[in-house]
Image (tube, rainbow, N blue to C red; front, side):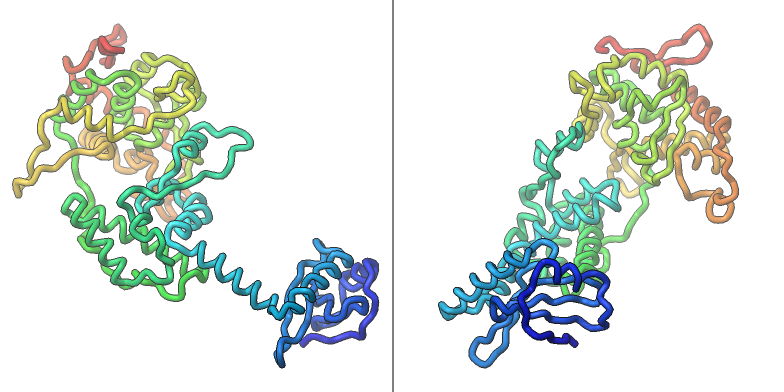
Length: 454
């Protein structure tokens, strides 16, 4: 309970004294004698703020003027006199302040603004793929922000977002998040089901990201209820098991010969190393020492720095690229940015490859860049590489060495990883011999040479 003190002319020295380790167990109000109604509220912790007390009708009102650290005694008296003038006009300054704060809050709780806040405070901190997360929820970086993130410079402003056409952000452009219902979420998920691949992957992803968003909004107090907490996934989650056949590997390699540098080399290195698409695309020359590429923890999906042995075949592909900047795979004259147009690369490859193969139900199943990673793992297993070594090559935390075993087994399996990647590269060379510029080098190791368009 606040203890009230007698009025006195407050000075800066008094404020300093009252706020310096106060001994009282309850907050105290020190009223100023110069301006009636002005008081300094001092908490037991020493925190203090200036307030103005007044009466409207028969109701006592209180208006906070500012923190004592940022508002001097004379500044508080000036603010109090301005407040008195407002009251003399028959207005209620506390009610007006509350209305302004409510209007400001209402203007920032619309869906796009809340998604942006979620991405800034949560996604960028917790999710390495926050750009994909933002796009699923309806936002994308502006062009200039995307460029700055790829090529950061001192003093760059914070990234800016804009709604994606036809996205959730455009759908709920002026809708406060508190007004989005479970039925709204269900309709948005069903729309993704209709517009997606027909198997529900896009709808499942949309629902999962909306659940993450509203869980965070609920935890932060922006919404009182979780509108999609009880909604089940619209389709069963089926783990992809797609592995490229020998003919498809051969066709893919031949198709890469039609790509210009650095896209040709990027796809081939992706297939030969079995590493993640984003990690390979963002490879930097400074990360390569001899025949070893170190993926830094900041870019590795699981947060663990990862050493990848580069076979002579991979080194041959990298040697065909010019070092015109920090990034290995870049289309920029300065090498300042890494390649990003993966869908364009995939479309160019598909134009030069046979149609997707059909499964037992007659349904065509296309391939993805991630399938190259699974193909490499399966190929190494066929060559007799042990499962825990394959997991180490892929930088997986799961697998045979996990839990307590992983805690105590710190063997990085460098020799085994080197042998596995060399064996897989030799196997790929054997498969694609004669497709897209394969040749033998004097060391009797099959190398994948440059095509005529390099």
